[in-house]
Image (cartoon, rainbow, N blue to C red; front, side):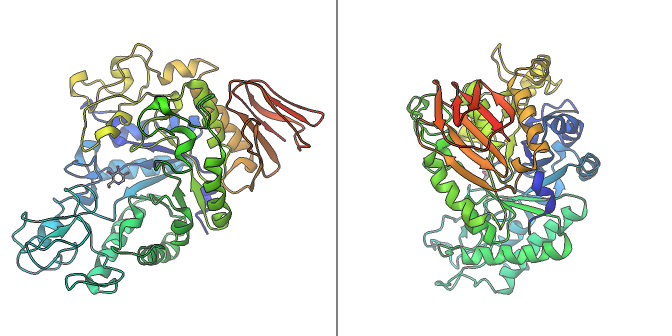
Length: 513
Ligand code: NOJ
């Protein structure tokens, strides 16, 4: 059973570099997050996911961890992080850290030891072949970097050697089976990291590349899943309210592997990507469902989602995201009115939703040169826009020394202005999340049933005893059907239900009881 606090959780994802700088060095910090907890809570989010904030050479923005147990000095100290946990808990909020179990930085002391010619405790902590000129089969590898006469396997970038959890089926002399003591030692080392932060008060982890652990795994990821089930057993015994969300993108597998939640990820062409990023090359070719009159069809999302949902609803949660640090912001191709409907949908669906910092004000994607291995992702990682002041309120450092430049446009959206404007996107998000908080039937567990998803008609679904109706088109649509929809609890645009007829004006949304 999933951690009970997830039943009404709404997450806010924070890229710590860019959220709020309290020591004027141009980069966000842990104390900045603590200072802004009231803002996040006021928005209606009661949980955080913080991207990796650990010591790192930052060749992949911190997903190249050099010390799992130390907060990167540029963000503050371990004590700052503990204070963040404590302050959050006092406000009835929860904090997930980002666990990177598939690889470390090439500068991690484990890897430095592993590179040595002489055998030691860490020789098998990573996946090494047995010869300096041996390719690692179909796995990406590096040679020529170590005194050890062998090549090693990578998990992502060149700076991220793969940790060794063994192979499901060993086919080469240099591969270890999953039950080899060294493979088990890797798994125990990760548990040790988890315990370290859980004991300090963190509430669980978002797990990076969760499906990547065991190499040459089968289609069902049996090897990797066995490891996560083992981790789950540890959590169930020692930290029963700890939560784990997978970066896996396959909820039936991830939830069976012991995860509480898995993301519906924005992989090109999959169901989720057809909601708001249905463009492969250019946004002019966009057929996203929430792009007004772009010819989208919600069934391309629902076909995948409903199959997942039916299969997993008693096992845990599917998490829909506004965006994340790897994804182009939805404001890139959607205008404010389109975003409103997207958020209305996202926050009235089952499971545990995630809002990426800045999406609540419609922050724009910026075309920028790469930073810390971000490449195109860099444009979604710019400083949070708090007000119209210096650096848009993010930092009082010189603009040249900011981690990334702020949105240079005159009409860059900001929190302070939108707070004052009743009809702003920010206030819409607040109202939607307030409604979700008040209505248990809009939270994680209440049953979802699709009533109508035919193109050209309103999208209508039931959540428990509530009826949700939505029209992303630029024209009025209607549906003749007996619905249980007496009282209107929420509305954007113009909507009505009378005499068995539901009418939704252009780009409208309503929740009825
Ligand atoms: C997924 C993370 O979200 C991404 O930012 C990172 O670059 C890779 N995993 C590698 O850790």
